[in-house]
Each structure stands twice: as structure tokens, then as C-alpha cells.
Image (cartoon, rainbow, N blue to C red; front, top):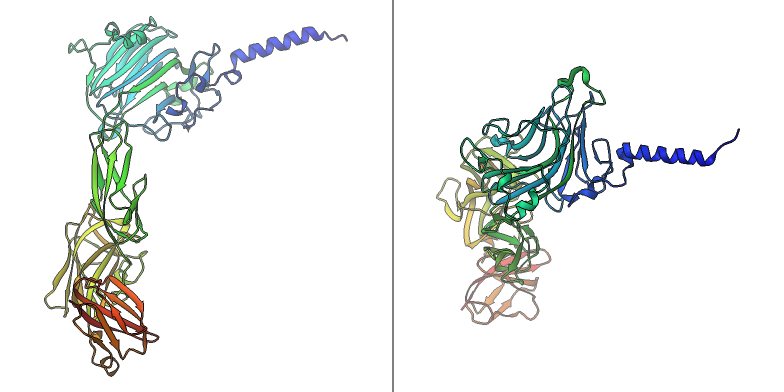
Length: 583
């Protein structure tokens, strides 16, 4: 047997060429090669599968480059194994618009100007229900907008449909569209007015760019308008490709027929969104209490919501007190107050908030595991005792406002600081009052009935106040900012102070200790304190202002402001507190 290798090679080459021309998987180009920005689009296939990364998506039977490598083919074979997409039984091979960087799906309002240009040809329709949508504007489905404006072909009738006639009557583009006819279409939305341009002469885009495309406008003849619909809505985006208006049920016995499919060839497409200018910025919350070292994330709101450039910069008026990074995260550095400003990159609009950085509490949480009673009926295991159990993973929950909890500290204390941790960082509104007896007269020490500051485990809502004596603490929750549910849910309540009975106690050990002169303008001499080696000095707010080791017994307080101070002397087994007045 004689083998002619030259003839065999020619046959093999011809086979490869023929196979390449008829199999999309052998195409040299892939769809992203024909897209201006492959990041800006995702696709839904007839199987129902969604693919968000198209830049390296290979040719497949639903989405491939044609033989002449000048168009993307969107094909929807109608089979028994077709999938569906939410709220539709029909199948699609269709692109959906995303942000230009591909990070998330885009949503725009009908304010401003938004344009979609597509050069395409509808080349094939299903056998039994020959209907197909090619190019559409999608709107807010929950508001009843949905497919707000689409170009639809039914047999040879090419027309505009507005959510299936729910928004307005259909408008005919042409009655005798021939499959395979290449055409250009522009969907344009300008401040709610919807325009459509259509051309088959290949000159639409050039005319549009030269502001000379009026001859291609599809007009609303019935109402004598150049635009076809005037309607404002949100959550809008463009779609390009093939949304076949049929499925396996509609096609009956012709399901799985290789000739039963919808097909659209797209030669070119682009979207243009005119810049939407910023008109303002708002920071929330408007006030933050921040612990030293504690981070806190600010929330910025740009107006309008669809502004093109939402970038802002952040600055702190005092970085020695609080720092803020480029993402709006605050960090408390030292005690004090500072103003944090957000400035929009576009337009220079600003908003400010006040940040108070508070030091860590001095002493013990006096409310920890103390007896507590609460109003209302608690939810499940969320009992009122959780309010003072020392754990921020539990909570007290009761429905309805107002609700009250009363904590018995067991004895009278000189109180100067409170902390509230809200469930899920809510900004509850409340007041705190103290009394010597449970049923006596309560004196309000904290009024946060207009509070908008959230409080979480890292940054509780902190209030500092002048020292006040009391044993019973009444916490009354009256409402919440932002949160509009019915539940009072607090994770933890804390209160700090000094034992009122420990100051100037008359026990023999304490009476032997003297601090003189008292009042004084500079030096305080400590005698009889041999059992104590450490001194801490607190102001009336409970703030530690001085700390030192007791050596010679002479303490210089000339640098302190005039007022009342608590001297705490600590030893190996006990501590005592004494009052000193600085003149």
C-alpha cells in the first residue's frame, strides 16, 4: 500500500480549516477581545449560570466570536436542561452592566445622562415562539419598573416595549425586520426622558457624535414627542445581548432541536454615563466617644447617591488626640477632644463631627454582678441580670419603650463615670439617675434622650460627670436613633466611682494618717502612712491626674488647678482615700 503523504497533509489541513470555521471553540479571538472594557460586564447563560469574570472567558456554545471575528455571538439553544433566572422562565445569553472596575453591579438613577450604543443583528428566532429581546434598560423591579425599555422582535415586528405595556404602549420601530439585518440602536436617558435612535445605514454613531442624529429618532407620534417615555426611577442598568422570550415548555416537541435557538450578533457596544456632580457629604454619627486605642468606623453619605466621584479625604484637628485614616477609621490616641472633617474630592464639600477621647476607667465597675430589676417581660434568656454580668456577648432584651432597670450597688458611692454597651452597636437613647434609696427621689446625672452615638464593646457610650453620691442607679431607655425596631437590647451597663464611706473614715488605722496643710496651695505632707507606698491623685471627675511612689511624704501639687482632689494611698493589703483641697 502506497501512502501519498502530500495528499494526506492537504486533506488534514482542509479539515482543520473547515472545523475551525464552524466551531466557536476553535476561534482565535475570544469575546473579551471585542469588548472595550471586559471588566464592566457580566453574563448570564441559558443554563442560569452567571459569570462575572469575562476578561479571560473562553469561547463556548452560548457566547463566542463569529467566523469573521468581528462580532460576539449570543446564542440560546432551547433544551430540556435550560436553566432559569429569578422572575423569568425564559432563557438568555445576556450581558449586565457593572461598575467600570468590575467591583460590583452598577445601579444608576434616571437623573443626568446615560447612553447605550449597540451595533447588532438578530439572526435567529425560536421555532414556535419566535420572540427575542436585544438590548434593554432595566429599572427598579420592586417599584414595578423592571424591563423599563427594551427592543423586542416578534417574528418580523421590531418594536419598543415598556415593561410589557405596563409603563406605556408599545412603539413600533419597523414591521418588516429581516433576520440578519445589521443595525445600530441608541438608548438615551436624560433626566427621566427616554430616547431611542435606530439606523440600518451604519451612520448612526457618527451622526450622534456630531449632534446630527435627529433623523434616526424613534418618535412618540401619538403624543408628538421626540422622547418615547418620561419617567424617573432608581436602580437602573443596561443589558446587551440575547434575552430569548421562549423556553422548553413553549417549544414543545421542538425542544432539543439543533435548529431551535435564539441568536444575536453584537459587533460593537458601549455605555456612557455623564458625570454626576457631588452636592454634599454627611458623616454619621455626629458625635463619637472614643476610648484610647479603640478604633471606630465613620459612615459617610454622599449626595446624590449616584454621584460619579464619591471619594473623600479625612483630617483631624488634633492628631495627638485622635487619628483618622483614609477609610474614615478613628483611633483614640490620648484624652481630649478633636474635630474630624470629611472633604469630598469633587466639589470640596465638608462635614464635621466631634470626637471625645476618654481614658480607661479608674477602679472597678461598681455595677458588676450587683442586684438588678427591670421592667417589662424579657425575651427568652435575655434577662435583666445580663445587663451587669460583665459579658458583652449577652444582653438584656425587652420589647417596647420606655424600659427601666434599677441596680443596687449595695452601699453609697461617689460616682463619676458611666458606660453603656448597646446590642449590635445601636444608638439607644436613655437617662441615668441616682438615689440613696430604691424608692426615693432620683437625681439625673446623664441625659442621653437625644443620643445619636452608637456604643459597642470596643467603644461604649461613655459619660463623665461631677462626682455625685448614690447607691441605686436607674437606667431608663426611651428610644433609639436609626434603629426603628421595638426592642430595648443592651449588652452591658457599667458605673465607676469611689466608696463614699472610705473617705475620712474614722477607723483607728485611718485616723493616724494626716495630710497637711489642707487646704494647700502647693505642698501636702503625708504622715502616719508607713503601710502605704503608692499615691494616686484623682480630680472630681475621677480622672487620674498624678501618680507617684510615697518616699519622703512631701507631695507637690502646685501644678494642679484649684479644686477638690481625692488622694488614694495604696499598700500591700489595703487602700484608703482622703480629700484634699487645692487653693
